[in-house]
Amino acid sequence: MLLLLITSCQQVTDSSDKEALKRHFEIPDDAVMIAYDGFPPMAGFGQREGLNISAKYKLNDEDMNNWINNLQSKGLKQLPIETECRSKLWFKDKLIPMDTETGYYYCRTAGNDVLNATETKPCEKVENLNDIIFALLDIEMKELSVIVISGY
Image 1 (cartoon, rainbow, N blue to C red):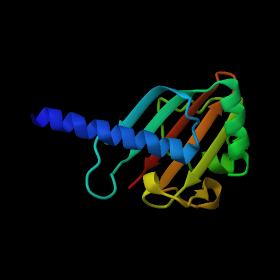
Image 2 (tube, one colour):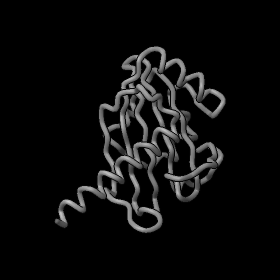
Image 3 (cartoon, rainbow, N blue to C red):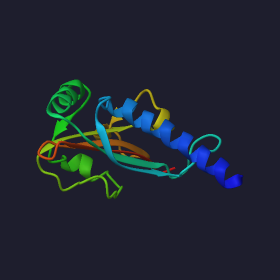
Image 4 (cartoon, rainbow, N blue to C red):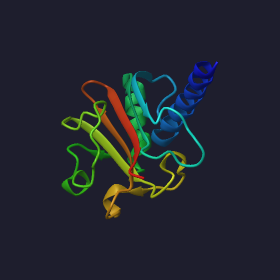
């Protein structure tokens, strides 16, 4: 019975986290999630310490072009990642191909409650990143890799 309850809670958390990723990164509805990793596996009360949620999506040409156009005004930049931004990125995640050379990246920070943040700032405008909202689009592979991570 306890195992069933834990599994059910984890499924609810994963579903909620996946929706948060879609909201933060304006991921198209028909994008295909090809990988997902979420920690901690369940939400408790308040913030989740050590939050690390990453995913990878396959996009078709139309969705890829629309995504680029939609995020241009929100701080989307061409790769490679600018030195000022890269020096602040403290995460390592197997789903985020940081060596990608052709495409775009998007980096924001909330300061707190990163998963539910409605207001964010560009990473380069903040001295220390307590949390990171980061996307990398590989235009050759048509893959969008995203991560929301907190250091608190």
